[in-house]
Length: 112
Length: 180
Image (cartoon, rainbow over all chains, first blue to last red):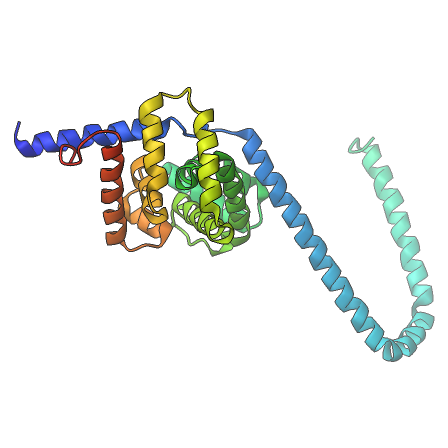
């Protein structure tokens, strides 16, 4: 064995010793408690972001509606007079569809 | 290679908003991130807090992770920055030493002397050197991977690892001349 080989072997042995000592405080490969805590925080953060986004959208929508209301109000009044019968018919048709669809599903055993 | 491609597919799914995919990434990499932070900051409780912060930050930044990048290195990089911010913001060094002593008492059942000598020597290393040692000697990162994670030049990483290794071996009573 040459001196270089001996040095390399010593170096590897020393590194192995260091690695073995470091390995003593290695966390477990699977830690459901840690993962669950992280994901709970992620979900909380996501929820807060969603709420903030919805609040923002609502505020912008409310502001726009408030600013445009003088223009929108007469238009909506005119439209609602013209479309009231059609909207009523559409609502009725929608209800009928819901009821019939539920019955059809029950009939073929898709719903109880 | 298969593991890397699994990471890539999980990252792609998480980038699309899948919390389930991200949860699997947490499961797969929590050990590496927590181990690195334990060694980098010397305080297990603080390291676990930082690891949680790391994953939270990763969730918000996952869209920026490039395809094919090492997830482990990316996470350790985020963790390292969190650690540096914590140290800077709170004059944490003194508290760290105190909690280090407390942790040391708590782990006395481990093979004692060498472990304690190693921990004491790690605590004395400068933050950058300590992080390089934690990645390259304890976690089998390549120098290039550590350089990428810590955003340090490759030469700096190599020199930190070499010096850190010598100091750790000296603390263990191994002459660095004998060991390379």
